[in-house]
Length: 303
Image 1 (cartoon, rainbow, N blue to C red):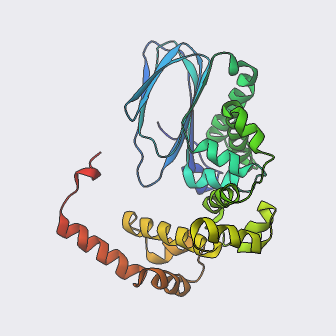
Image 2 (cartoon, rainbow, N blue to C red; image 1 turned 90 degrees about the horizontal axis):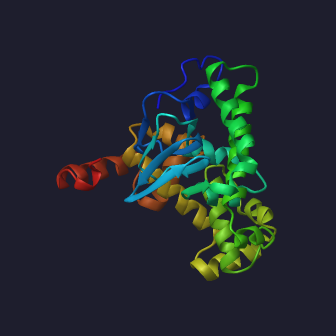
Image 3 (cartoon, rainbow, N blue to C red; image 1 turned 30 degrees about the vertical axis):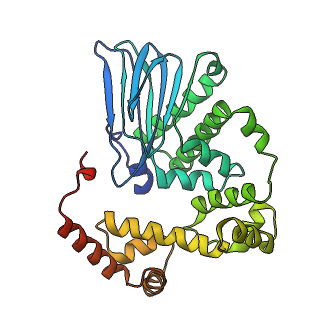
């Protein structure tokens, strides 16, 4: 899928993070191959007419309009539509998607929804079809001819699409879960979900506790009981794990990787990383690459 040709006037982050196209009836079928790389991208297909087919991880499904298919950023897939099909195909970087939903009151539910495959078809979709199509249309138009506030407009419509997806795919139990904060495993589960949304934002434990509607002491007690460590250690472990992944997979300077994880001071990032891994970020990267070079190519890395 190609990026819309005219992206002048939009911030580079939006122009690279969001791609969208409208496809319409033609003489030939259309197909897209989705391969996740270092930048994981979620995809949304809205099929408004005709038929199509999608396959991922050994699963194949037939699509018949109207249909809405959501594929999270962890999925490699193939999507195709017939020669008479029209609709929209959107993709958005995972990191950008997280930022869009993070500040929303329903962030936990939205993130859970966008992390799994969803297929909405049949009678469930038509009541929301026009609204979803309008958001897709607005995003495509703004990418082609950006205007004032284009970044905000695109982000707002992406959030609306996520909300529609959540509403359409939510089960009966999930609807009732909205009102349940819960204790013990439920509270810690919600905390872990919130950490996924905000671990790069530098939130203190007190802010997580406030967002969950509990005291810091209660959050600490439940984390200790369920995970054998406090919430601060959980946040730091997630940061270190992400730092390791980026150091292994990305050829970016160490300072830039630290900045992307919320560290404004490179020296502090180095001290933080060394505390948990026993080596500076640069030395860790060199050690990992040396180990990979010694072990030779991995078949698991093949496309």
